[in-house]
Image (tube, rainbow, N blue to C red; front, side):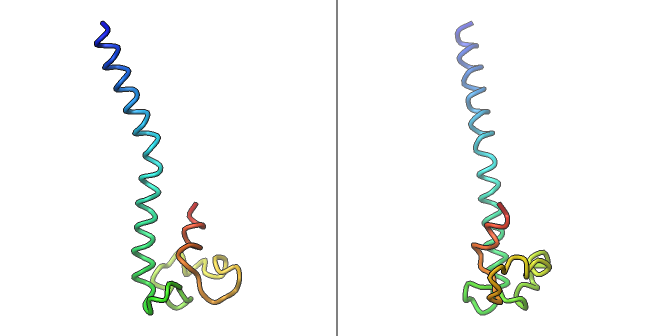
Length: 85
């Protein structure tokens, strides 16, 4: 009976840790995908997307003015990441 309790407790602990880590893993995957898509859209590789470059990312392009709050004419990867959170 003690062995069963140990196994059950271990299983519950592992499941709890896995569940706690899952959102972070998902967020990391989303960030990596965003980074990849941003890099592909950033044709001049300056770390910024202009409105023209953003057309490669339809949702970003549609919301470009809202993301570019400072009206600089470009958006950065960090801005996009902060919008996703």
